Length: 146
Image 1 (spheres, rainbow, N blue to C red):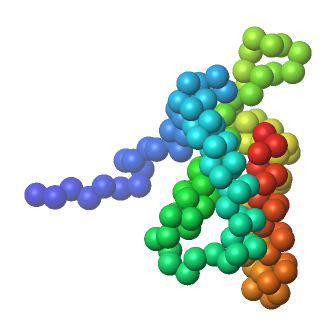
Image 2: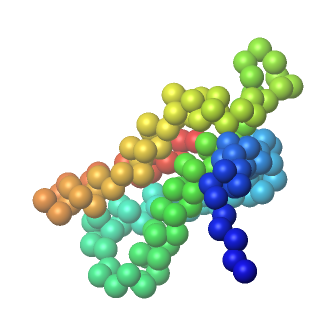
């Protein structure tokens, strides 16, 4: 005999669930992830100007395109992770802010706009209008300023 599950029977608090994923900046996994992301940003600094000057390969599975796709994925993942990364409270070097709402507000008011601009594919879009506008691929190199 099957029993229908009603909405009031299921109690799920999304905020409590997501709060479990908050981590400190000195987390060792995040440290190695940051090294990997910075290494991929250095590759982008070389590959995007090269592609803008010589043309990007048409084949998606070309190593250059795969490396750039992986690098874009890592940068996108880093943007998402920053909404869960605790930050030090000003005036107290020992305590971290671990409240999700405050972390999100801090990131949004801090560097989220910059990260969003660096994520947007200006070079890809503008080079379709005129090949010389591919110079906007150089904006991706600003990702190294971390």
